[in-house]
Image 1 (cartoon, rainbow, N blue to C red):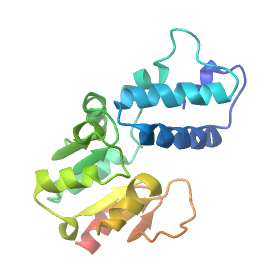
Image 2: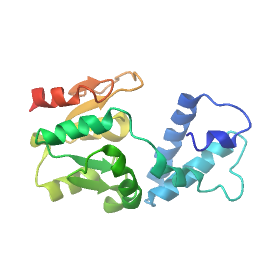
Image 3: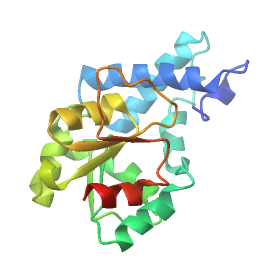
Image 4: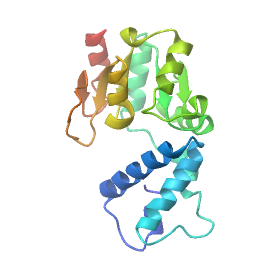
Length: 199
């Protein structure tokens, strides 16, 4: 949302602005499959229209063009390196296009063993396409996999319904209503220890 907020003539409350965007993005993803760049552009334009300040001409791709510059959370590289060094295989199941994910991976500090994107599946989580493709490519199922995610809607609920153990990264202290992750963490700092406990 940092890419769109400067285009408004007034300050916005970032968390509320982000929640409104996330809701719009989910609606756009449900309409039909389209590349994630288009999802970002369409949802971003709708959000700006809701504010009464549509995107200016020439700024239609502000949000998708910003994605390669989105930083990882500070603890992510160290945590992923620790998991990889301990012998765990890492996979990313992402709702972005393959080229956008490739631009983001260097920020993670480690190269994952497997990447699954919405572009590969022609669907967006919470649809089951990502998990089906993951199982096909990895040869492992829910009994040998721990799904870690920061979205109840996109990750924890659907993964749990498919039989995966889940770790919810609850960075915003969201209430857990009608969902029971295997574990909940505020960030990834203690994930290596938790993975060892659950192995």
